[in-house]
Image (tube, rainbow, N blue to C red; front, side, top):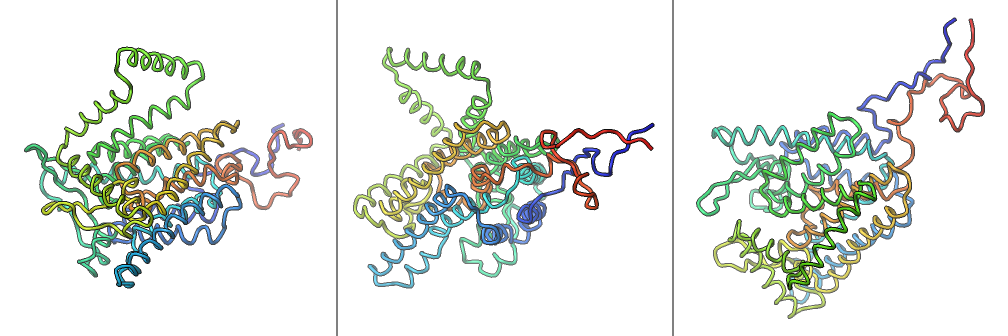
Length: 467
């Protein structure tokens, strides 16, 4: 006689579009409609709204998350204090208030709130990875269309949107609410098409796409995983960002070593340590070698490198003149022709200029505290799936550390919000509860004693019934 199984015990997998929490369902909608929101100029505003609302509905209970969120919020609040104090010092408190409410301060608040939103998602890593892999797939499709359209000259480099048209003189709205497909850049007589897409500028696309590539590697569905990773690589390559491409090589190598067997890991690390020892014996240190590589990379786009170095030099000199509270906000251009605002680009030197030691120490504590928390959790974690989530989070943290030398993280926290959301999710204990992707479909009308239980939790084995 055939065996009888109550409906729902067939261990049918949950459909790929099922998300197990309310916050996750809103994130699902946000990522699903990201291209349409971008074309309307509402993408980053929608992300900001989601980041603000999600933790308020279900604030995470982890004490580690509380401390980390507090540190990132403190960076933004102290930057606002610096702006207000400098406004009072200049006798223009309205100017200080305006800069206290600018992205220069609010960007840090978005970073902290994104950590809280990630911790409150209560999603497993494979669930969250599928949602963000969708953004990588969009980058793949939009990138191919943009490159082809730019090559044959049928696609404009930018389009107006209702928010950007409402205030055409606003630089913030132009970058965060505008639509820019690409821009042409000429270097040594050669013109390069740099993709921008759903980001404020090309390097942001590169850094964001690198994060999507790393996160997509955790996607359980092979189709979404490869689409997300390929789209991420398209963004990294065709943003033509040296920062993103260099960080990608380091991040992929780090992820490989973290996931490799201990024997393989040490078989790679020990020869590298031996090579470094030989270089030191012959008078060449690894630092000298890195300087040589850095100089070669800079020579690829020497003008851009010289501009960045000029901003850093002027920012450092200005910091020495006002080391405690800085100058409150990004200053005027350090070049009479090119637009090179002092205090921009580098987070390390930029925070010293805009906020002095007051903001820089808070930023260092926030970033290093985040990296230390991920490292501590990774070392102690024994569950395989949790370790994989934390390994990706650790690589994302290292990318942010590298990016801090060359870009302003406060300007990337909104377009690259998934960095902080993923790290918050990986650090949250609630994120590692069994998810809908790991459990069978349960019938709502089953009697409780017939509902599915994990094998180890079953009080007795189920025996077949005969009709």
